[in-house]
Length: 351
Image 1: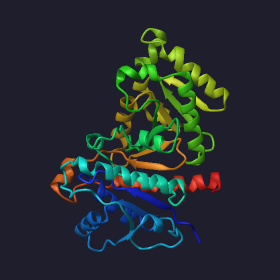
Image 2: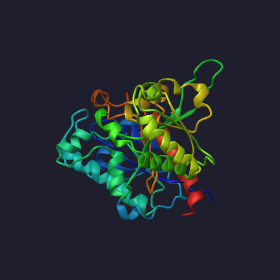
Image 3: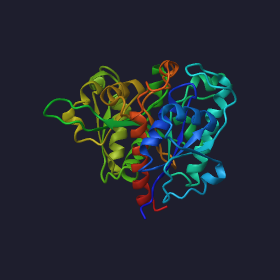
Image 4: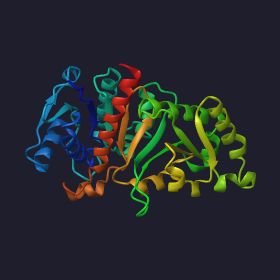
């Protein structure tokens, strides 16, 4: 019997659209994956009945989550109950519930490391609320790295682009980041030959093992305008990026560049590339989100587990207006991508 991937879905900030899109995404994908929501069961059940009374949720505890049979396809959604501290008001943040958001993520991480879950999909969280609860938190990516004792992880967003013209079909676009949530003034100092080499190795390894790409081609941007203009607009390309790429190529990694970021994102370059490595958050992600928003997926590379997420935030303003307005397309893509990655990884690692 074909093994159905067990996908843990953390429902994110309860006052945002996370719970709604998690329920909708899990319900729509239940024929191809075994979805396990992690969140407050009572609140999720209330929302599910308002979304569609035919949606079936089944509460389980962490022990039962360890015994889920992925070959048995329950026609509904399992929920590992992670109770909230206080009642939720959609659109209104409450720091009292910040600890519960992290508890749900901890349950997912523990289950994935034990191989009870084949992958984790995360709905968006509100960083400010978690910090207001007294817990230092910079984002899912950094938290997952800390909790899995992973020294280096890589943030990558991916998605199918919109058609670029009548004669150019949409194509898969993957953009990884050399740095993540850093002030611009700190970016240059954070990029070193060693760090870039490690990041390129992670991208190459995960594209092979988790995406099934035999020989990944990675295109790398420069840091400065025009990729430094031969040193006239900055020396990082000459002193750091080019030496790192040369070292990566000697290690068997197909990495090219550095290219000017303002001209790299064109179909004639991208259609033969498996991933773009941008130097900082707002260099690569505006292009990716413009091209794929609503279908984009956030993926954390380098972890001893698979984690995907949606490409957007908590959308408190939409949640405040009521159910039925949130687009769950990105959640569906995140679930499907997690399942596909789990299949490749299982075949390559032989769990």
